[in-house]
Image 1 (cartoon, one colour):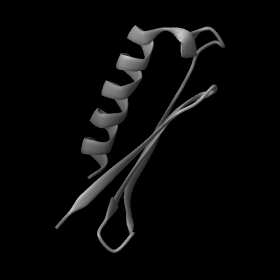
Image 2 (image 1 turned 45 degrees about the vertical axis):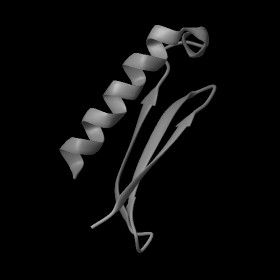
Image 3 (image 1 turned 120 degrees about the vertical axis):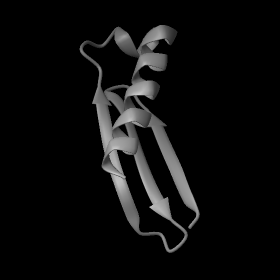
Image 4 (image 1 turned 90 degrees about the horizontal axis):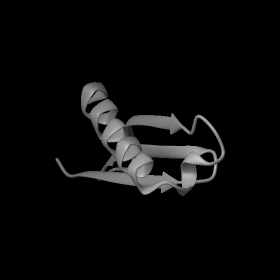
Length: 60
């Protein structure tokens, strides 16, 4: 089965969705910035990315 991961990094946080080849959502999660300055810090983006991937793996 093919799975596809979509990521969105925005001003309020990050979101991830995992879908299959039939466009069925298999898992989704989000990471909300603690404050408005966090979305400007690269190391926080990295932490958010790793958190999203870990949560997607746990749900799938």
